[in-house]
Image 1: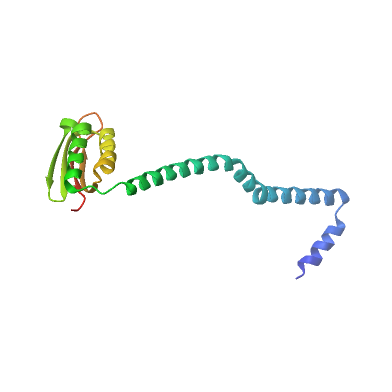
Image 2: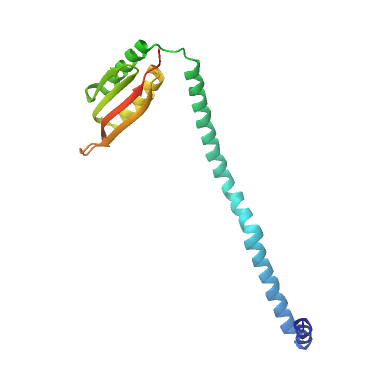
Length: 162
């Protein structure tokens, strides 16, 4: 490796002003690399930590709420098929009104929807899960041709077993 002795010889012949300039440039380059590699990522993490902590706290609260809801559902007694059918029928009439029809066959209930708003559908699904303890097993929904966000189709629900 003849490069090192050549560089040393070249360094010796440089003027003190040139040596100072090269050392200054090397120091600035070292500082820039240190900033980009070591300090900038750490500062970015430090600055965004507060927002991420708030986001994680919100997620934790939501998960705890869902856990409490699940525990409440587990603690409720089992419904018989007739009680579940009555509760489901009441929820369909109360929340969906004339936009839905319920038909029950064995342990399956089919709800036919016609022009149901997305909000009403979501609320009804939640309430039917809580009150009637039914689970959707199949859904065939399509968005209505009307200007408002409404849905047509069928939802098949599993009633509690006997």
